[in-house]
Length: 180
Length: 388
Image 1 (spheres, rainbow over the protein chains, first blue to last red):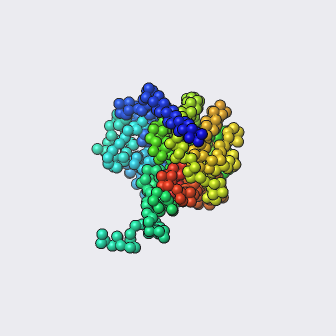
Image 2 (cartoon, rainbow over the protein chains, first blue to last red):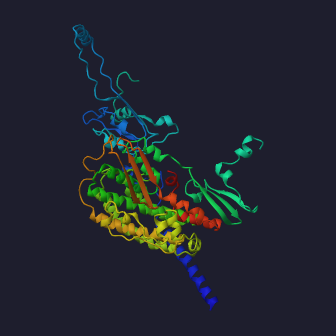
Image 3 (tube, rainbow over the protein chains, first blue to last red):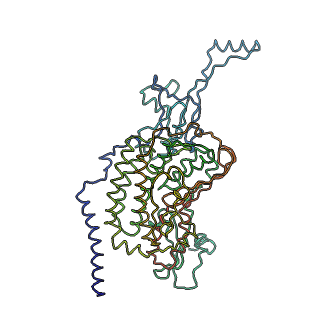
């Protein structure tokens, strides 16, 4: 009796493995689920975050919406953004003379306000964790993710991206006078 | 060999030198890890072996310590969000949830109802994907290679779904104090509706392929029996505790978010062994699917981020809060002490894996080395979470 029971148990045990083989065998007849990159690509790349990019002004595709408030710099947990504010434009000779005259008369010379735009916008992609706090907290919506998700390099310096140059390149505009 | 570093005070590291060999000469001291594939990351276990049997096992931690708690003291409340995605990379949304709930408690912030549902839906999806990866990896530890391929088929679908609102596939940083970062699209909800029956149809296949398989049963049954009093002694939580026969689930015991409105059971097993833990986790996938099914229908329209949600330079009122949530591995706790500045004064993170690992030393005593691998896998450890 004991021997028969043991035999029966062995058979059920073996049957469990046959059942497993059936599952694996069935999989052979099904189409493959693996996506063979680079011959194939997945369809949902649009929601995948690429490195940051600047959003252009609606009227001038070479200029960013950025007002250089430095909110993104202060909110970034990894410190990967460096933004330099634009300096006030150089006064013309007439304005300089007027300022000198005002100073002699004992008045404060009228200063030209600095334009609210960045002169440099450097983004270190090697530090970025793509958390999205900068894009979320930008008061003018000047930052977004690019779709350039295949960015790779063997040199860490290649990840120091100049976002202003990138924006100009996308707009097809020439670099401003004084640069290159 | 004459170098000074091979002589007594410099030989080996701290743990090797402090791990006293037993009175018997015939024992062997062996390092399992830190690069052993069955240790899921970089856990190191120093074991003393008598033949194939373990006399003593001591886990050595700290190889993946990243100072998450200390980093909290130098970052503002919003800036700490990406850290929460990286403490436990398999169920990051539960950590997101614990942290934002703690900050909301501290700042007395209300959360819109839609945001609560978004949190529940995404975090339950994430729980399923975490259990799926555990399932695949555990069987990989036991020497079965195919199951992880099946598990990843489902996991990929969940990640494809979650990628759309969260923008990432692993280290989500999606919740915000006062709501969530992005709204769920109708396509996402439709995707979840389609995923639920698909996942249900796969579960019987899991049973046929793995759960009933005699090889797995011999590796799991009566291996690593964890009595309830021992589980409680070590502060185990999550599936490890529930498999010892105690129906403790933070979602039920200390309800948060909209879980009280949802119907789901707390799977419990009286088996106490590795098989019990295995079955509890598979049952939890089904319960999570039940939650998803209800939440997708109940989700209301409305705001996703409350007006007046913390801004980057938000200063929290002074105080002390603790919030616990149920993660895939157990009770996740975030304790914030605020002195009223823009940064927390101190953040303490309670990782469930830490308590679950600490009982391993006692559990592995007297077992075969290969059974210890099975026990270690059945505890579902994520080492980054343990080291923090």
